[in-house]
Amino acid sequence: MKAIKKKDDSDVIVKIVIIGDSGVGKTNILLRFCDNDFKISYSATIGVDFKIKVINIEGCKIKLQIWDTAGQERYKNINQTYYKGAIGVILAYSMTDEKSFENVENWIKQIH
Image (cartoon, rainbow, N blue to C red; front, side, top):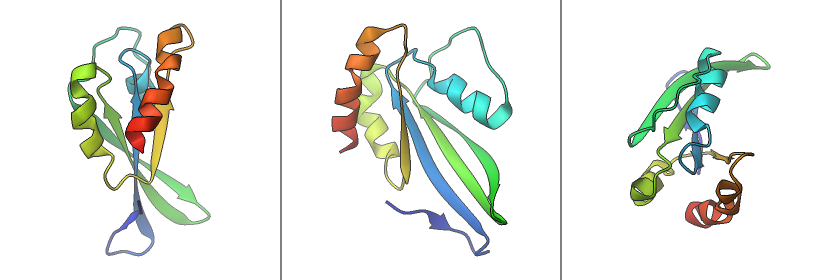
């Protein structure tokens, strides 16, 4: 997996995918980091969503393309297609849902 460079060498796009069980807070991780927002109400992500966050590291403008995937079982095979081109994965689980932590091992297997 590698970062995708744009025409302008100072801009780099880095794809990151957030995965984990349904309802563990993947969308709120994305919203908090990109928009400094947090939603108390819960609505399941259908398929996939993404946001762009531009960060500056030592004068280099990095565009993070962060993908929020659906955690429902029916989307697991589809989600694998979104891993292509990703340079990193954020694996999320809920501290209040032991099963979501136990499923981390399954998510790691899916990544591989």
